[in-house]
Image (cartoon, rainbow, N blue to C red; front, side, top):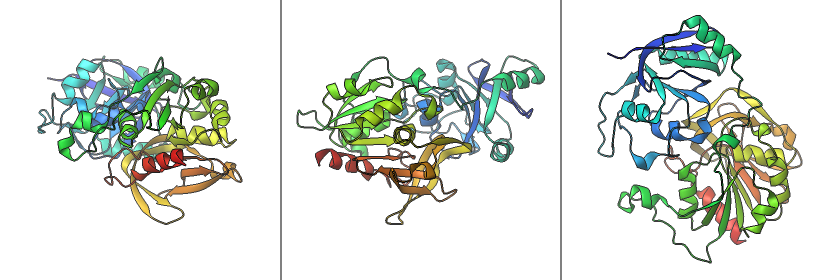
Length: 377
């Protein structure tokens, strides 16, 4: 029988359930995701580094785990909380069950808690630090540990998940998921292909695959790469990836991106979008509980078209701080926050959401084609 697990929040709220996965005690920001599935992509997305993820949908584990759905080689989140876990997967793509994969990956999880109550609590009181424990420690000790833990504001997590050295990325979606599934085939390497230098702040592998699918030759570089080093690679365009933590805390990147503006087209996603805003002299701020899920409605300002998007972020761009520097191109219909910007006088743009994900299912995919078009121009 599974042992007891506790999830203790910094404000004193305690949730008791059953442990599965690895037997560990972990500290992280407790956040919720409203997606009905995609737990494997969520847990391996580097943007979740340092976070304990609560899945709002009550049933998890049904489709198991398979190599094709990884966004990083191993989980980047530090813990998982679910209402009910399927003991056995029921998908032909599954290679192992969720519990087995978590145990092998060293990531602890808790099941059997009232995730509806927990999500409501985080919605009302905000995302906060917490401790997920399987060690039998007292609730009072866990709460105190959560209270002492540093929050996300002011933390540079991108430097912890970035690549150690530059490398070429050549894999497309067809190489992983199979071209027989209706996925686009892998772009063929060619000297004439537009060369994209992708800054890795915690890049999802599916984003890099879609750049290849769009016909690009991709070189991934560490977050600390300077503008001169990037330009020495002779890029046709620069991509700023997603990533975890506070964009304002990533050292040196706003200056790097500012130096690249007007020299090459730039495309930023999520954290990369926020860093682009900072490079313009804009500001970012922490949201109460963030946007995490596959059902976020985003409207294109110019056309009033609404896309259903996948999102994962706890910070947002201050629209007023970009006055005279950038045009706000997309807004979130739930709360009016900035979801996209285009730099005035430079071929640079960014979006807060994840156009590589498939909630719509492919509402936002044309943004990759737009990036290629700008490089061609």
